[in-house]
Image 1 (cartoon, one colour):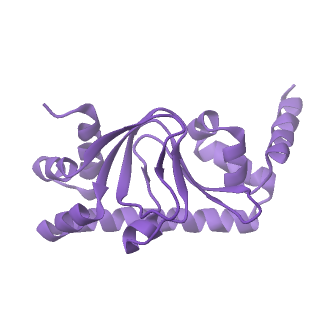
Image 2 (cartoon, one colour):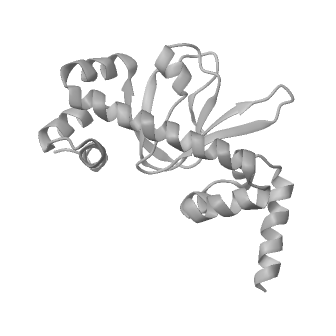
Length: 198
């Protein structure tokens, strides 16, 4: 009997890629389940990112550490999202970022070799991965434009509007670094909003 996690991934494949039920099951069957404890790392710098990860449950964070020692959040991933160090994974090079679980999580993983085999066996799988890449690129472009054109408070408001469930689940320091501000400044923005409501 197929587990709930594999059913979720198969449904993702049907929804985004228009795969048949059989193709979606084949796609999901190429992945392996991994349970990740809170604060456990699944990717660390200097080691290659061997897997692309689909989040079944939980929340994960990808970040880099600057020369001054401060952390810069690159991305979050919750249920039905994907996460890895894409530069490391795609080019099979040592990773430059950390990926850590913010909650006890379950992910489905596929390694680079099995992904290539999937793409070669069915053009629909290749199309699905391409659509995922295109969506990811569009998301990164929107984020870059927001960081360049919006104020810190506007960036926070935009995140709250589009990703309220993530804002509630991730630590304040992680959200602040994702939005490009200090934890103290984010706390000040939040406190100002509370005062305006009262």
